[in-house]
Image (cartoon, rainbow, N blue to C red):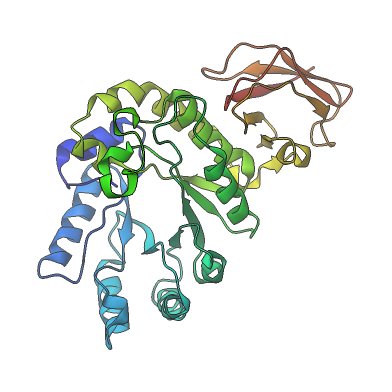
Length: 342
């Protein structure tokens, strides 16, 4: 969430490798449409796209709510900075299932070529909402006051994995904030120990989402929360890593078609071959592990592996259809290699 809408904030977001921005703007308030127009215009100025916040302030439950939403869609649907519709944030309950079904149908009628994304939390009924969007988004922010590597990062990736099983594109929403921004939620934690994700955890969030399959990207949450704590230094600290992940994403042609190694999921790993060129291995466990397994005919024969980016220079190879990592993969570590045919 990039807010407020200013040139400085959008410049900072762009410098981090961001391609889309979002804010919880309310189009149905007195000056709401003006705020969204400013967001779209500022994004266009900086070469960014907008994940357009479509529903806010209970408009969806008003007697004429659907027509109000339709009017907003018609006003903004042709703006060049519009990336896709952000349908709703963490819905739950049977009433919302019916409401979003109607809104989604309207959007497909009015703007059939603009994707509709829906953000879901791990509610008991989240699966009921899967049919009513084009792109699934899932948020889970597992880093609280635990020292590394004790934060339960698997809660994030397991949710994304469950979403990916439906076959729709998935945009994961990883944590890019400190829970001190939400004191009412984090009151039970040791406040002095609440922290931001470190670089290993950020790499885990990004690469696990890719390795799970059906990935349409990640949407970091949240730029605004970093500003609220006055911690712009975090942007500077993590910028090199964010730009490296941006560079890797730009190399990929079809990340959504990653070939997933099925053994990995049942062994506390995620592993996939992307574009038949890049091998991604993620340790889904807070303990270092050894890795030596068959390649399931996804990669055949003998193959050398060249570390990509800041991947640790640990020897890994494929011989006789068997992958072997020398030594260990560290807790929550992500390793990326470029395939080198022999």
